[in-house]
Image 1 (spheres, rainbow, N blue to C red):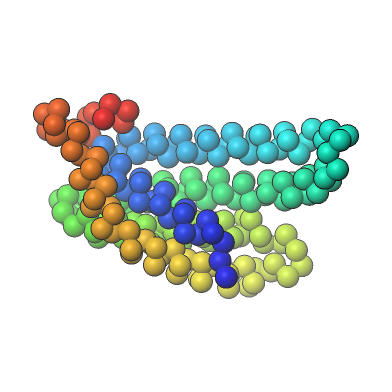
Image 2 (cartoon, rainbow, N blue to C red; image 1 turned 60 degrees about the horizontal axis):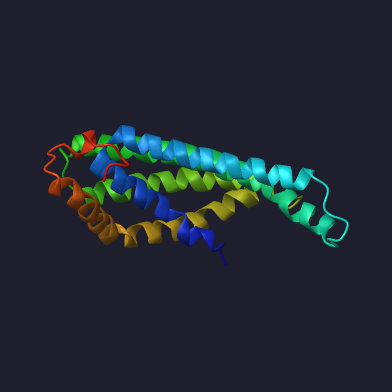
Length: 190
């Protein structure tokens, strides 16, 4: 059994690969930074909501604090693993784009995502779970990494056609404007 997020989170790598292909490294780095800032904002709101006392009429204040207090560690793990893995994905994607002279989008999409998903899963599991309970030893957490990563790899391999479709869809408005350099266009100017 795996978390539901394991199916939705890989979409972030698909989106950054599409943006990287069409708009380039700098715009994609801006997108990753915006995502990281949004996660930090959610962490701040969560921490604030746990720190503030609940209303007297709310009978589940302690349960709320327990549940959302635990999520703080997972949010920190999520922020760190998101940022590191997305930066890794972006660098590998563009390294492969240079090496393949802009050809083989499928290769860039898959290799950058598969490696970055391993980075993400490893960081998230260790930061989020290692030592959180007595059974969460290094060996136990390491054993959780492979199955979660393999599910992410399967999702990543299935998204290849959507990467091509996404690139075609995003490029269409750029080409209608007559630009021959989509990387120079602003991310928000589509």
